[in-house]
Length: 157
Length: 239
Image 1 (tube, rainbow over the protein chains, first blue to last red):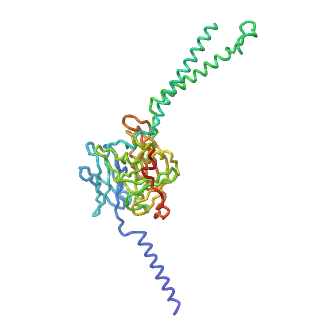
Image 2: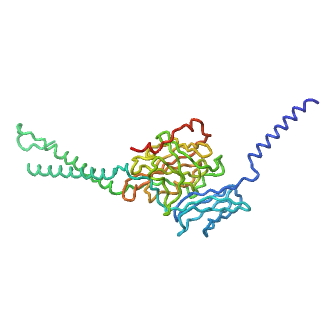
Image 3: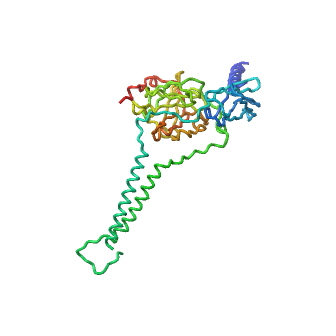
């Protein structure tokens, strides 16, 4: 029996590659990750939290505050939300999610809610006031023209 | 069409019967247009908000579903389309809870919001840069308002990976009403936002923030060509 030898080799190779494919495609225990959206915001912002690969109900706390969040199971994830409470100081906070015996965290930054001061003003064109003055000029010219028309017509009459 | 007041007098040229009503109409249009310009420049234009997809930001986003990168801080940003080649510094919040910005004496430098995701990680990476400074005139992010959908932005990370983003749009918002849900919210893929100033300049600085929205397209190991790219230094911006 010579034939089985290569067959056995092939079978082994197929089996091995199948095992590799399976083990990479379905990790035994994928790590939990936490994602927040948005990642920054002012007091009153609603923040959604997603614990990926957490296939059960989870809970979370915003460390250093008394905010706690329930994350009910949702498909293969757990998901919930909280609202940045009045009086929460600006700064960066850790949102720690506990999923069974695992935990993971993500950061949220409480800001004043305003934009960024990204300019000194040296190139500001102030287009708006240019528009204002040209508009005013046109109004004046039109009014003067109408007055002239009126005067000529009454002079002709 | 004009009325003939008695016998025509060939010696006197009288264009008025036809001229006057036309002139009146033209002047009325001018008057209305001028008034429109005046009112329009005084009353702020209402801003259209893009509709959000429902209530759930994760409806179209699966943070664990893609082959996204781990954490590594960005070091530089390159935008070939508008000639931006800038070093990046880490930025957080100042004492008032406002966004830190690069020093005004470093017009060539941009920054990244270091409490958020790094480039290639899932979530929004936010870069901030000045549009101008008192002394330099135009600064590092002066040209980003010219970016159009499809333009490429490349951010290099400390680990030597270059993350490539594609611009999806540019918006301008009053600073008091920066839409955090859009700027700091998740998208289906890792996202990038460039923030600079725009609008009118007054006592409180610029009135608006210009935000460039971009989304992840690809990443690569930095090539020799990438590493040879010049960085625009401070001297690039001094007049």
